[in-house]
Image (cartoon, rainbow, N blue to C red; front, top):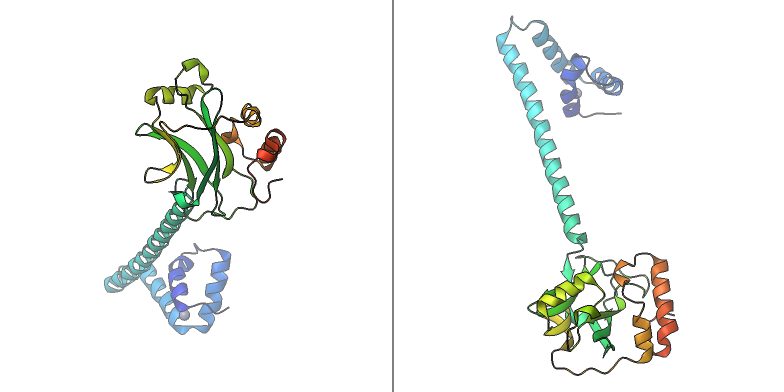
Length: 265
Ligand SMILES: [Zn+2]
């Protein structure tokens, strides 16, 4: 194998001190056989080490060469390190689940109605064909926002099953009664901001209206009431079998009322 002189030059000090690996040693040996320039460099190193006091000028030369080699190596490491950090930063940015809120034009809200307990139910679907990283919620300015989040470059979805195709509900009775709400955290959050001014999917300035204060909503059908009895935990669904169960539950309880997308059977 033909090794460049530059590389051998880097190895020579170690080679001379017998501090390099067997493989490196064999490589340098082979190179030295065919390269008089490197043989000369090795001889110089040997000369400087063996007779340091006899030739101060030569020693300074050898030191300079050492420093040159070392400086070049450090620079190369630093550059490599910079590229590594840059790559990590780009990957983190592109895949961060807090990357971006799905644009309002890709959010579909349908079947908005009110349950007997005052909760508002609706179906949410994001129609851009991408996966959804997370679905969070937040109360902003007295309004409740369901916030569908994607990574910057979100993967295409493989089926129509997932958090992008779900029924959502929020406890928003016309008259607030503490004992009505099941979820303690949501209850505490709602209590602070009751009555809600509105319910949206998206983020302020990029939202689809689900309901706004004063707006009358149709009462939920008996099938919808039945479906919502056991449909409060989609946030925790992760596996395919979770979603299979969820959609077959929808199918069983909602039947023809079910929101249908291709692939949901
Ligand atoms: Zn050489």
